[in-house]
Length: 243
Image 1 (cartoon, rainbow, N blue to C red):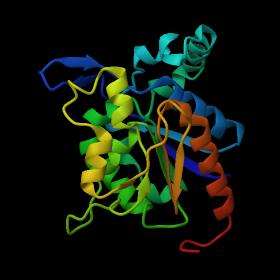
Image 2 (cartoon, helix red, strand yellow):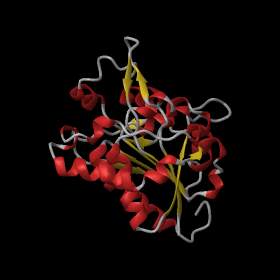
Image 3 (cartoon, one colour):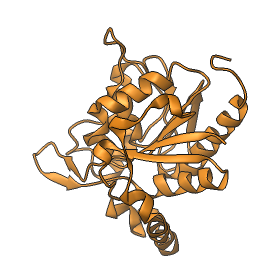
């Protein structure tokens, strides 16, 4: 049975360009759909957050408007979060995580990672241990790749430079109306750091796989990205590290 670490933001506020604090957290669909996929497949999941603080859902992600006007979907997401409340109430401390114990890491988005995971030393430590090992899976969704920005080697080189990936796009951020007051934009920052960023059409499922790296563009990509991770883990099952 593969073991997977799921890292959730512990941020509840996103600092804006004008100094205001916008309520945030993790995006419901980006946790729920992968959690469903992994659980159904029998993956041994560990949820962790900075400081072991309880991850908070972005309430905006539970509205019908955020889910294509689908009130039933929004209610289903809320019901699922209630079902797994005990897991979310007691995450592991990211600081205590030994990456060697896992076959991979999965980092959902929401704007929260822009606030805390983008500068988190323990995320950097975990990514630095897993990314160079082709037998491990490194995956993230939407704003989750903000966590990648924290990861450098001993010489200060960004570990993801030259890697193909996607993320929530600057176009999508603009369409949400949040780009103007954002302190920085994720796609722009990833490109500036050296990522080979490959955007897809706005609000459509788009997943990029580059070696052991899986990235999904937006909430619509959540289930597809999770299935890509499962495929990767299955392909590597039984293979020695480096195979």
